[in-house]
Amino acid sequence: MPESPRPVPLVPAVPRRARELGLGAGDLPTGTHNAITDVPGIRVGHTTLIRPPHVHSGVTAIVPEGVGPANPLPAGVFAGNGYGKLLGTTQIAELGALETPVLLTSTLSAFRVADALVGWVLERPEGAEARSVNPVVGECNDGLLSDIRSRPVREEHVRAALDTASAGPVAEGSVGAGTGMTALGFKAGIGTSSRRVPLAGREAMLGVLVQANFAGTLRVRGRTVTPADVGVPTEESDPGPETGSCMIVAATDAPLDARQLTRLARRAVYALARAGAGYGHGSGDYGLAFGTRPLGTPAGPAALPDAGLDVLFGAVLDAVEEAVLNSLLTATPVTGPRGHTRRPLPAAALLSLLG
Image (cartoon, rainbow, N blue to C red; front, side, top):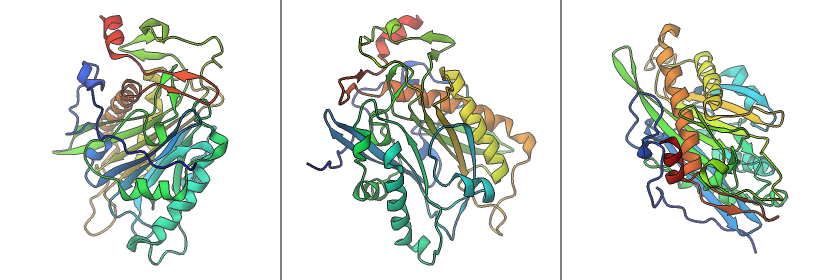
């Protein structure tokens, strides 16, 4: 029987996010929803595919308002370790421009997702005259908890995520592209966070969204936290730590050019070290950063001086660290087709451990 999109709640039924537990990162305030959608003009949509025990997969769409081949946004990309398929990377690196929404999914579904994204863009006013489209699709491998070879994500699932993308709270954990993801020994998935950043007399907004699926040992407040430390059982037949990966998308309304956004993307990947990332051989650790304000147009602002970037660098480090923790706390247990189970980070046990 074919999979069908499963509705997901906008927010967890029980507050379990890091900041609600007193575990927020850094001193800067968050936006209203502490999500990438706090950046004006950014919407997020998920399609979640679940058919236990075989399929736990999906797609997540980050949709900047009005983006298209005729209306690109400044962007930069950084590969901390390039064992992955971030489609569209070379053109972003060459031209510093993002011309489609950013989609996240499972490794072997990335190519179908890219084709569906091209079709969606060509049908919209922003792509009406396009003769070339650079679809941007990132992926992580959900093969531990889903039948990855079935490539369950189809065109209708991609379109549903794009067409239902909305501003406001963002569902996290085992939803969309995070449905089958694991990280640091726990069930993980989608996580998001934002920061309000003071910049030269004005306030800018920075938001991040992560698809967390990487190996290492979790660190919270400088302390290592293993599954055993918080009472999460392991299995005798467990295949061992995950080898990767993590996709990080950062958006900001600060006036940055493509070179500066590449620097921001680099710091986003560095931030994974704070959470305990192992950066292993098989880990695809990517940062993609884009701005929502086109530069160099009569109505566009001038780029921020490089000397003013430090506060943004600090903001993205804090936001990524918190987004990863959110992905672990808001996830739900999942058992895959070969009987392997991953469980989320339990909030009560974590707080007890940290004292």
